Image (cartoon, rainbow, N blue to C red; front, side):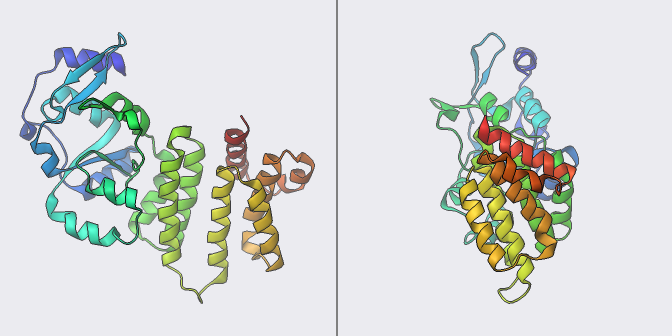
Length: 300
């Protein structure tokens, strides 16, 4: 990537913002992100009216400084290769803000309002709410570091993103939350906190589609999914205690396979292979892969 970068910086010509192909429709960007298995790189329109200085790593170990990202076709090409870049009009700010203001964390809303780049998933939720402190070198935004951290291949999420965008309901939100847990364990450690924040958003969405008196097994499924998150965070003792409490209250038979996976991972994380063994036979291929990944990230 750095060799490509250095070559482009040497050869590129500078063009005006109007000549570049930044997308301007967020809805189009969401569709394209799903089709191309990319995250969306979004910035508010007003932020593009002033220079946006960036630094880029070169292949000789140094840095190249560009005074305005929005005037460099080479940098745009690099962004396009890794994200779906979109400039969003301030006209949609108010409606978007009021649709999320009571549903998101303080850090999330601060990033939503900020003039910096936001990395969105194909639903439109922000990933980069906890950027590293060294993302800037003086006034220069470290573009290479940003790309290496957030340019994700979202193929694993594709079907669930499609389902949620087509029809947001309990099941599409729940399965997208679950898939984000799997996506978390398959990605780099430094991103886990931010990916788990997206998991929290979709699990909260799933819960919003059921009422307190509606379907007990749906509430139970959400509770079990929270326990899976605890295992990603290496809390097997807590999970075993909660499972034993739930056993006393009767676990719905539809959740038996999920419960078996939770027991299996919990005992393996505690190093108790004998206790884990009876549960392994009840796991399907995907569950075994996910279980192995959760165990590996917490025992290395």
